[in-house]
Image 1 (cartoon, helix red, strand yellow):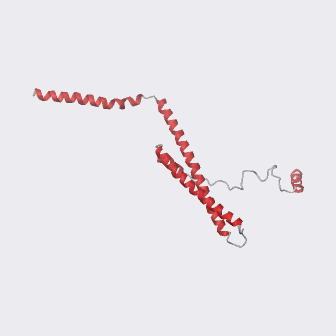
Image 2 (cartoon, rainbow, N blue to C red; image 1 turned 60 degrees about the vertical axis):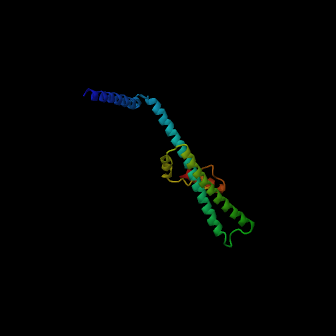
Image 3 (cartoon, rainbow, N blue to C red; image 1 turned 90 degrees about the vertical axis):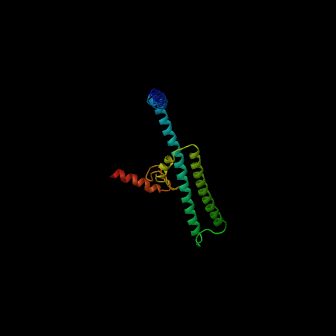
Length: 173
């Protein structure tokens, strides 16, 4: 009977030693400073914001280019009517449409390359999916700006005779 007890003690000691080796890294984790983990957390958030902003810009530009190509294609279709440009102007218009469509395709290629780059840099796909869930910013049309049409600086094209009357009407009231 004594022969049987020796192997069991040896097994117990070996098992406890292996258990201690296995648990040593897990027990050391709480002793890691919170400062180091906070720095890596801040770095991760900054990295996430950078990648999301880059993707957001690419996505918005691709959307704008596709919309521009659609509008130019529609306008070119309307140019088949008699009141629209003919000859060289019409051919130039057609070249603009083709260029806009190529630019839209280029942005699609850039987005695919961006996804490949993100995969190579081990960026979690959820970061980019968050941007895809956001609405696309179509931007302002080219002829609109934030200037107030009633401001004093915007008097160009207005009749100065009536400008003085508007000011005096406000003073009389």
